[in-house]
Image (cartoon, rainbow, N blue to C red; front, side, top):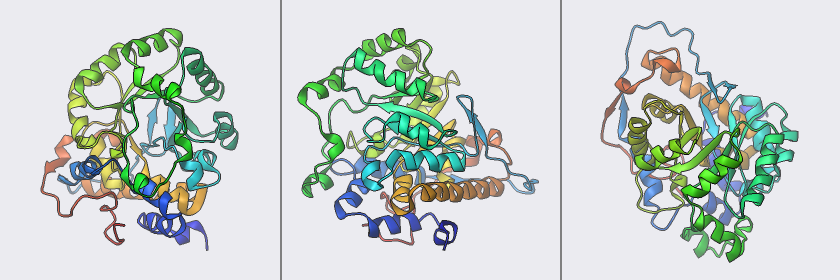
Length: 360
């Protein structure tokens, strides 16, 4: 059977991943920090939004394509950086790059992954790629990664700014799971803890022509400072609930960010995005690009590059369906008037968007 025949619903990817991954890797992919409250609030923030549809519109031709940083995409979806991809699948970031190339989406490759930047580009010459860096060295060290990303034709260069210190992810700790991509000395880790706005300005001065994206913004004042230092986009994220516990849901944070930014830069958001309806909700609130994390981790684990492509195809089908049922045919028609507040009907969890599978 083909991947298209094997996977007819999005929930079949996490179901397969759970059965095929080593238990500690499954728990890593599913887990978050300490009480996992932030991860649950990510889901809750989406579940407390309901759609208000419009009817009797001609929706025979629905188009969810978009353009972002000059890239023409089939859907407004970016695959967020994940550090352990090479442990989820032997091809890691290379497989993800091929998957997004075939589906017409975008991928933000992580420094923590073990697939080098040139290898990702070689694997997918026409893929739309960006890069995400954790600061583990000084200016010269950073410059080398900038050069690699620019030489490989990556659309933008991201810096993760919400990980000054490592969080306590107790699923991993209790399983005695030592993640190989977290290896580092105190000397290298102190660079991230000391990275501040002055360092961002210094980066901007050294690389004025590079599209810089700061990933991990949640506070409106920080969004304003990011604009002041020349961030080409505001990436609203709480690291999937894997850094600060008891944080607010990303969608809730994004509402304030949108008001602060006022269209001066595109806004990216991630956080518990699992269904096409989640993508559309984020777009209605003003997001320009919607990023997914765990969902493509499940797909990669289950079926490699073809799994990533198939997952994105199913996600695009869901987006099309939601748009048509809302009465719109293009992303530009979406807006907050399609959303109302409503009580959630399920307890939030990393897998609660998939009612046909168990939670653990």
